[in-house]
Image 1 (cartoon, rainbow, N blue to C red):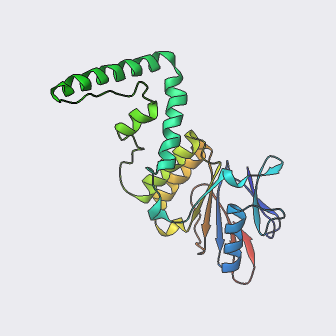
Image 2 (tube, helix red, strand yellow; image 1 turned 135 degrees about the vertical axis):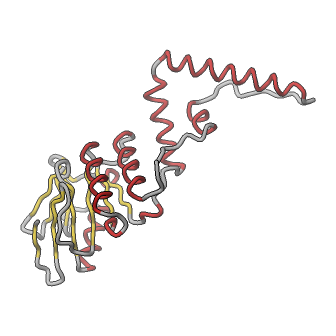
Image 3 (cartoon, rainbow, N blue to C red; image 1 turned 180 degrees about the horizontal axis):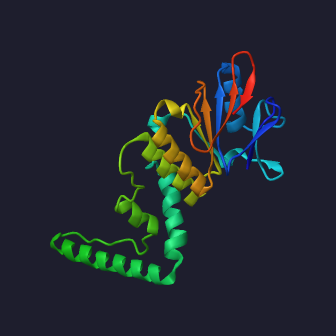
Length: 224
């Protein structure tokens, strides 16, 4: 996958080998790039992501603009996780049989324990994997509540569940130190999820695997 910047001498960044850092100090360019990444059109306003010989579809790009609002337990994400578990782990006939036997034992125990009630009760004849996962409160685990930890886990989920091919983080550098950023970078490269850092502030230093495009307020562009 290639990120191509059309107004910067047609600069390009291989997103599977580098972390793209776009430092854009002019608000109008920043906004145009954000629009290009969330609502790709041809011709692009400023940038485009190419997958082979075509533009990457918008559905394959996920943008995170609020680092504090990043949730790993949203209904949509958990639904995809549970479906993925059903289609992978429990597509194995032996594992599915083990699960069905466990559900049967739980059903028998529950109905037995409820005999003391003067009520006629029954259970659903079919229990789905997603029902078991929801009952147990199965969610992705983070060792800490840090933004970096959540981002690393989210990148892994993007790869495992095929949520997206490219992840765009808006102003994320304001919330993490260099070591945390590099940990997120390594995880993205390892999982082959393209990572684009969209920033409005220019920083002189370059971190691990970063390739920068810096556009200042005078429209001068520098590729670092």
